[in-house]
Amino acid sequence: MLSNLQPQAPDKILMLIEEFKADTRQGKIDLGVGVYKDPQGVTPVMRAVKAAEQRIWETQTTKAYTGLAGEADYRNAMAQMVLADVPADRLASVASVGGTGAIRQALELARLANPDVRVFVSDPTWPNHLSIMKFMGLPFTEYRYFDSETRGVDFDGMKADIAQAGRGDIVLLHGCCHNPTGANLTLDQWSEVVAIFEKSGAIPLIDLAYQGFGDGLDADAEATRLVARSLPEVLIAASCSKNFGIYRERTGILMALAENSAARDLAQGSMAYLNRQNFSFPPDHGARVVSTILTDSALRADWAAELEEVRNTMLGLRDQLASELRDLSGSDRFDFIARHRGMFSRLGATPEQVQKLKTDAAIYMVGDSRLNIAGLNRDTVPVLARAIIDAGI
Ligand code: LMR
Image (tube, rainbow, N blue to C red):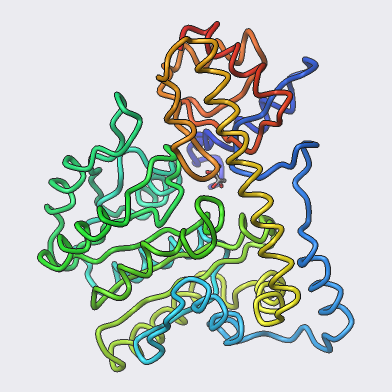
């Protein structure tokens, strides 16, 4: 039986990790997978995470199963962090296996509620969004998003395309720090997007994987909060991988805002059912670390301060790279790098130029020219800038 299996195309982002490891050149630079690295190239365990883990180790008396939906403390703390004003009577939530697991459960939930659901995704989007939908056999279409001339958002194209989504369809939106482009909507533009949903009855699914990496913990949630305040039904898939630096703990949450409390109860039951079908109980360790931090004022303050350091480090690298490129190119055509937010920017280079960066300069980025800003440090920024110019970008 197993010999009947077809080879699977490797994930492009994960493949880069292996390619980078195998490269023996000194001074190679990894701008591939979206993992934060400090200026020493280390992905640190955050101070508050260590402290919370110690506290859990000292006080935890059992490893018996948690609830199917995960612990209420975690879900409440996350709802508070994401939404600030939580409409508890309308909110269903389950802990999930990372943000990716939340996306998968959200799509499963949408299909349970509407077997004919269509999903609208930004062009481009995180490749795994597409891969999961293909695997599930969910029909999807892309809406215009990235303007390759300005490296900003093609907002008119986006509005026209998402207006095609009808009642019962899903529109997948990046709540902040768009992956892979780094180009984001303004709050005013989000208001216009909300007006389109009000008219069409389509349901937003917000992927919030980078809260705290763009303009700040609250600022990055503003768009999600606006959508949640305005519309009767909203799905939100949030990840703790990046903002708590607990990538391998697989800590995420799916939240569903329902029209009323009866629909909320139905959603809660279906979401717990989906957990049970897919993996039974959600992982608990990361969730417990997160709730320990968020419910303790000292730990929370320390975590928020460290997250701000991470965010400001990335902003500093953006400014430095834009400025180096301004000097080397004698133009402002790379200034978009300073305007983009989050871990990623799409450079707008051709696949051949991306390959040239790899071959000539041992610089690794995703084939669509997405670069992870956090893979840089103050010393490697000039190296990258020079290589970008040399590759003719
Ligand atoms: C990324 O986009 O690089 C991250 O979200 C990691 C991943 O799983 O692809």
